[in-house]
Image (cartoon, rainbow, N blue to C red; front, side, top):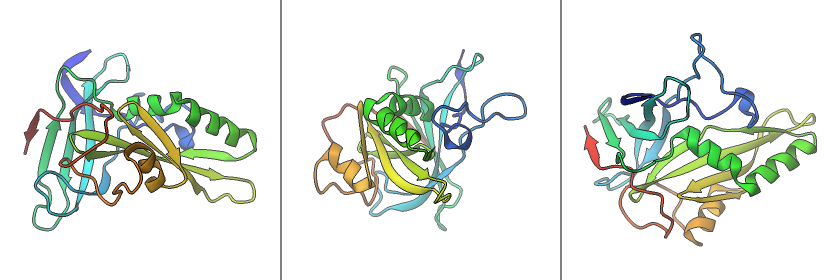
Length: 212
């Protein structure tokens, strides 16, 4: 294992969005890498959400094991700061979930697993969206949409939203409802921030060092 070498995290979604499919492969036989996710994100020091893109980094694995996240790279997409990169390094002593580990936690949750099995058994096609990473307080929130299509409606429709925070996994028809299950009613789902309050869940710190 390459302890000091980092790479883009492999993607978290199987072929055609199936939870049981293997990850799509690149030409060299390794899993495809995470593509940038664009978000309206409010970080420490921001007075309002800012348009940014994020990409997670993990340790290089020579045997293909799923690795924890080592850093979250944030790229500024606003006009005034376009292209500026900041890296939020994770503590070496903490295991911060990468998209692959978050995907494994979500799929292992009994409620999510039961819902996926139920939808598949009714003849519907379940498509899992990309695991999205949102900084919140000093932790990370993982959000994954779940789409369903059928022979009558081939176009995928949003069925549920899965949220992972710390060890808590919730599923609800909307993001707001899923967040309410973790943070309580009237949670603010309009932005994500690295400053402010959170729940009692222990999600672990995302950063001991910020490099810009």
